[in-house]
Image: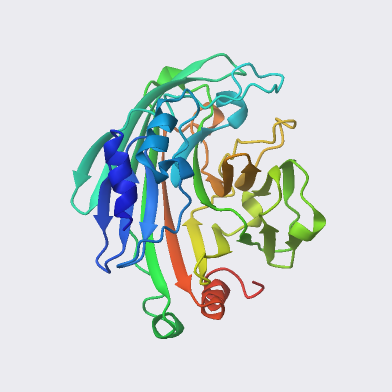
Length: 351
């Protein structure tokens, strides 16, 4: 566990909670923003996730949180989609004005410890730009440990010095007033990683990702028969998306650590291709069905890679007022070949 990070956050008035798994790994939760900010293997201070460099000292952290900018602390956060409705206040048309609703992020999370889990509740009201309607919502996030999915198999994990840490995230989204149900809204979970790694997405067949924005060079993206690989390293910002019907519900990120070891972080989640996936590219509002997205951010002080997924929507034609989503994050670190073998097992033999 990185105690320096905890001390910095405490000094600037941001409380944290630490959940320890039975295997000794630790999960650092920051209620401000409802985030999993850190994931640590047993007796290790190296975070698998990206955190904002401003949190490196009390002085820079205080200035960051006192600013009027979006307080992107890092780690794993939950937003809501469609992005066009909730992040472009004046849509249509799409303009340069992009705004993270502060009632969503950082929100106002109420925290309760429940056994070995931590539950955070945020009640909020959002306005949908296209309809002009407001919607009252309750979003609950429950965080608890996730045992190594390979613990009963494949001796390579236990014999080559590979470290493991993981957690589960249960996210419940509810439309509080049935009269608000004319608006579609869905859970959107975003995991921030150190920039420069490879996104690995298993697919059922050869699939060409959708380019949402930015220029993705040909050498940075490839589609095999059962795997999309996206090298997230370019300057500027780029984003891709894949449809729910094309993928089995798992995405990985493979990157080199400063000490020469390699890390693999996998998000496992449930996809329902019959569900309503309502997020769309900014310039194609009717192009629906995308579940997995990845955003490369490498501008100014920002340098991270985002692994994103959407859950099926509630409201409007769905007939649902509530959706319960559950996902796991599995993280491994060790020698390159050993970590690659984990990727072969949990993602695709094409890795």
